Length: 429
Image (cartoon, rainbow, N blue to C red; front, side):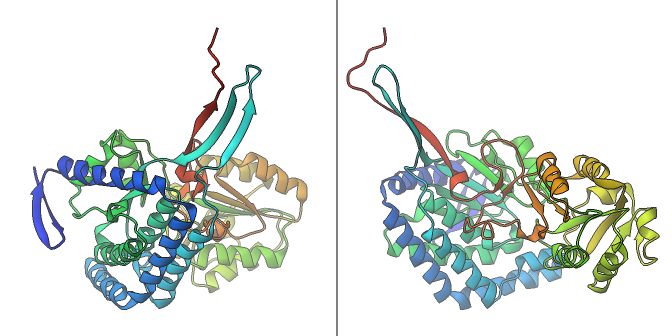
């Protein structure tokens, strides 16, 4: 089986495995060049890339318009189209995020710990790049720039495979980004976009052990499940965001209303959006929270006790407690206290972001300690689940696993470490 690619205006055909081997080998060679570059050189290259993104605004937005038109013709949902859509403000935000990454401290070379042994050996544990990172993602063209910036800043090369929904946008963003990097002397192969949408190439990436050092999937549950099932390369997983907000009995009424509406309705199509609202049976203002969400345009699906609060709430099914809607739909349940809320979250949370609204410090601390999610919040909207809001610059995803990195994955999450041992001639007896 061969796949057809279009590179530098020339059509070629090769097997998926040969294609991945070729471009991964080029990426690994470019990564060795990155490893020799200084902090200042990498930062300057990213500032040049941000400048190029701004100067190529017209071309990028024209490419995005093609993707939006194709998406509308295919019947993509409103949430998917929102993720896909670019405008001058969003594109400026992408460039700003690249500049923000340039201004962050370089993690490479950071000494994590050091010590001296009784025999005089000096031990240091030092951060180093992971190597060549493959990013497989759907419908979000900003990931092209975010992933490229984070990988480059942390000394990694990137092999990007975006979804077909954003194919024109991704190529335009990558072309602008590469133009900026080239002006700063960065090898073009340091940031590559797979030159075909053939799905067989994804399979080849997942089995390219020894060529690709880590795979980061960003997309829906089916994409992540496939990557985790088929990969022979280490995977940093970003699962769906089935995020809960629990309004405790001692919650402030205004805070509960404001946070709940923001957590769901600010942007319904992002992974940090609230998908289940838990209302304590003893909270006196549940009707106001419910009414505010409905008036903001949200469809509510609730259990019997939730439906008793407001007749406009539809009946929920068991499936609703485990659904990432990514649109203006919200599951609502009434619970009998903190224990019941914790039990529901333990049973249904995806481990992304969960929130408690309360004035009770003891309840807040217990929630923080017992909820086993990557991000746990008190009195704040789950829409803050974002690397930029955490002061990390752009992010490559929200890792919901328990190994290597967790929560917003930025520069530090894209490094590993090695031990450096300095001796003066010691030989082990």
